[in-house]
Length: 161
Image 1: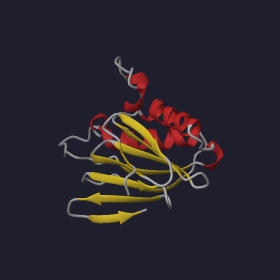
Image 2: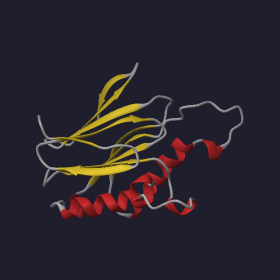
Image 3: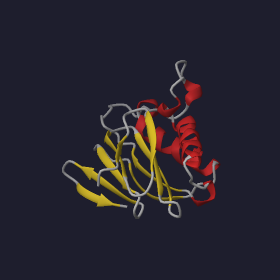
């Protein structure tokens, strides 16, 4: 398989059939994966923060769940996907560090998961599977052939959703 697209942190991209789109090292970040099973087009946004309106430097739309998801949908449509066909899978959003006080502000992973779910709901894109939370990082690969999302975690093996 020579059509492998790598997505960095605070980045997004798409891949057409037959290809793989991947991102490494999702900790508190969330991988928002969109897939059109008819056109066999996959998209991935590696988001770092929940909302673009909560920070001053928000020019990189791919960094945030709200703007990154919207940009990803636009990009997928531009290469032939249909919005009404899109389904979503989520991975990541881990709590990588333990805090002595229950400081919700510090649990960026959980906030990223909630923001990702919220924007997908607003866009009427169903989440059909997710592997989120916990306390370990993940590397993910979406295969456009069948829409399977392979999740690799140190000490947790490979899970396919």
